[in-house]
Image 1: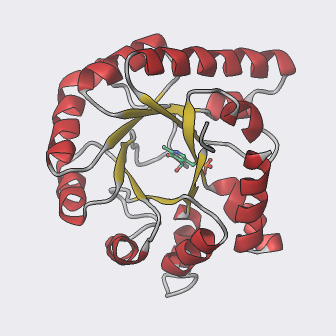
Image 2: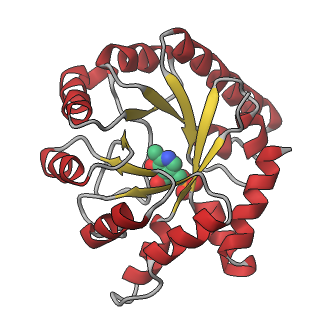
Length: 240
Ligand code: PXP
């Protein structure tokens, strides 16, 4: 079996830059360093409120990323227009609320099948493969398959936030069931949110998981050990 791909989410490099509204640190430099250290892809979220990643970042990253550029985005017209004009290697549709600290909960594909299907089609017609960030539930997996998306990214937040071994095991088993159901319906399986150096391994051990997207823990560790080392450590944890 091929190794699970690591997509490094560099949104928080932009968060730090936006704290001063200046030029540093530069996300495009972070992307290059992450790639040289073994990242299999670079993930960014161009939010409607532009709180971290800016349009310029997307343009520069599209020109410079040598692995795969995964654009997380809300299912809304202006961002769809930007995605179709920029052609990332993958689009991941996520829910977005202005007040949230980070993406909270998965996309309700079952409850909004029509607009999600339209967005999936629009992106795919432009040649962009689409992944849907969903809660690990049978209902959301089935709706994702109906939408025509190629992949789902299973939300690992509840697993990552579990406070007891029992709850963690229960959340992992939900992820395992959703991953198996997704594969049975022909979907590829990714995972992400809240993954870190201590909780990633059970997730990548799920046989269906092909890609994880990790941001906060890697960028946090980078403050102390440097970004290249932080990426290398995650890659080597994932390889064992
Ligand atoms: N995957 C998706 C769809 C996300 O929205 C996020 C957060 O931006 C991540 C992965 C990365 O989450 P974290 O920063 O907690 O690793």
